Image: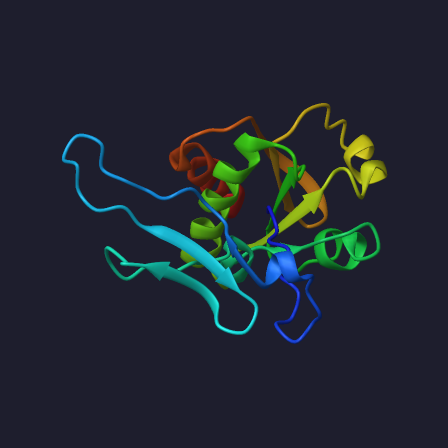
Length: 172
């Protein structure tokens, strides 16, 4: 899934120009002529709003991934030797539609916990695995049971497509 890069620790030395910097242009409400707000970064105090309109919470999508990452090194153990059915999403970090599929796969991982294992594989890092399964474009979701590929879903589809394929594999 797309990953978030970790910011440098606040104790790391920053150049004077980065000690306090306005990260974004002030936000305003052009139709209403309402107040404007600015987001500031300060090395010691972190991110601050001037006149914050409401409480905001910044979330990193990598913190909420339910599907585990699988690599070429862990492929055989995690996928081929799994005792329960496995779903693998083949993705690339630069792929926009893959991010949408990530959210669906995370929901599925929660919904099917204990009955299905969900993994993601970055095709840019493990090209040989993608080539073995003839993955030509991403996103692709493959379903395995007893180490064999049973179903595939190519492209970005509604959750129901993935669920239908999962149910077919679980019932086989």
